[in-house]
Image (cartoon, rainbow, N blue to C red):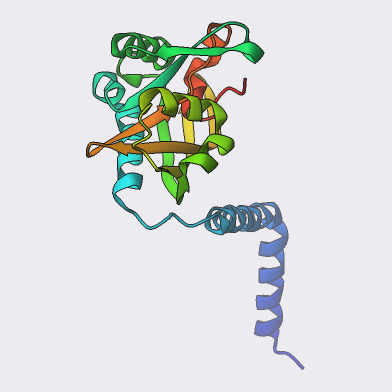
Length: 211
């Protein structure tokens, strides 16, 4: 038979567990949720092996988050579209000063409305020009405008993934970013959007407007 001391010890432990059952249950829930969250974070696609193109794209997003729009705009070819959305026609490229002013309107001077919690390149592919035009039609039109002599044979497409905070919102996003190389310089082909979509213009870095 158990001793009196053992019996008393068991009784003390039992009372302790009963009194603190709610706290213990909460602790187990927190541990469980944390494990689930970490498991979900780890279950995503791993970051792609870094190369010059993925570094370039990541650097441009960092310039965006730092509000260095002047530097950023030199590395982006953004389309300007005229006409109704479905019938929009590419009429040129956004001048650098217009691109800077638009970014200041969208994200604030110094990008005070934007903060990246996470940011990474998860995929990198090189696509033949013909396939790229079929894959991203609007960006293909911009490529034809930028490179009418068809010097560019392949387009690099970097898949970027991130989590933003800003404007009182949290945004998880994944975005394919097309990059071309001409005369030793990289340029991002940015779709842009017709004027009717001005209010969501800033989303093009995360979720391009479909039109």
